[in-house]
Image (cartoon, rainbow, N blue to C red):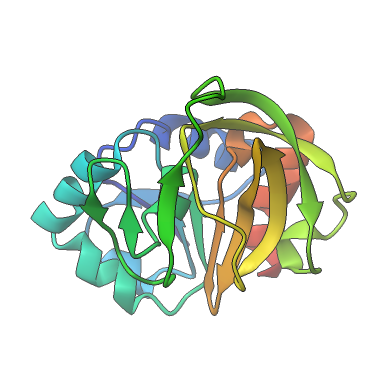
Length: 194
């Protein structure tokens, strides 16, 4: 069973719709035992880092996430919250990835909204059957720089991490649930192969 973490993220319904489309069984939950016993965990995210961390901490989910041993997929804000710190609201995050989230340069139109290509830095289970430099749908004002955990990168003024992996934690800056067939393929790969 896949656990979709429930913490007031704005894209939970669209993630659930995408999982239904690819025939996956899931539960939307904030129950620690359900999350920790799940075969896979998806951490959706749309919104503000500070308020999201406040919600996670209020439910005790910050500590639960750090204990997850099953394959884990963070989406959009779900990637950024894995970092140590975010410039958005000067927020201490989960610290699973030892780096900081930065804001795009003021010279750019922020947020980045729309399609951008993902350049695969190394092969992993998420990318099976997905051509390099495929386009995915992004909505983000903040970004994680390219770091040792970067598995895919994109360019919007600067080169930034669009896919990261640390141990059992995968995350995408883009929204696979809003990225058409290629996004559904990535979600399916996570559910079936990772």
